[in-house]
Image 1 (spheres, rainbow, N blue to C red):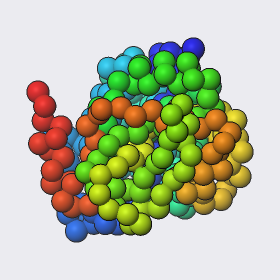
Image 2 (image 1 turned 120 degrees about the vertical axis):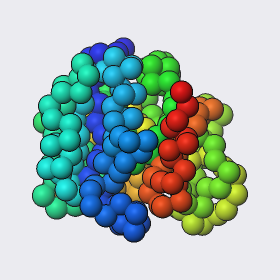
Image 3 (image 1 turned 180 degrees about the vertical axis):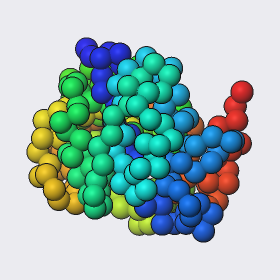
Length: 236
């Protein structure tokens, strides 16, 4: 099993943050200030605490500001940058970063959400399942904003439900993945591709697993959750 210290971690940090623009207009979403720090620093701390040593930031909107803020090192980790010149979606951004990935599997994280899952445990579960891709899943009170994920008794993903199609309690994709390199290689370079809407649904039946964890989860995609994230992360 490839441990965190030998695994490339990817953070998808290129989003426009359109829905957050009314409260965070002068910087990319991942640099939104939370408790006096850029939100992205909390994700990087999680990776550093788990002994990751190599992180690729997939940047786009205001990309230079991200590089200027963090540079090429964070704690003991090397930071590398894959910059999209035009929006490529989550899948397209990941494909663009392929030359910088030197592990198999690779950890992928959304840059606008935080989940306090034990990444080491997740990696061990992924390895034990002998699967090509694994998604961290969490339970939330209302799935309407996120869509939902259904898994069978063995933990294999059987379906995805589009956001807005149903309300109420359910299981969602927490935006943290372990993916075999060959999944990324199948994404056509230079095209706008969504992991969630295009890549993952195609992998149903081919070994895509969901691991449901009793973890806390929040994203900062809308103003109400952005205003709530300070208290969420202030756990010390």
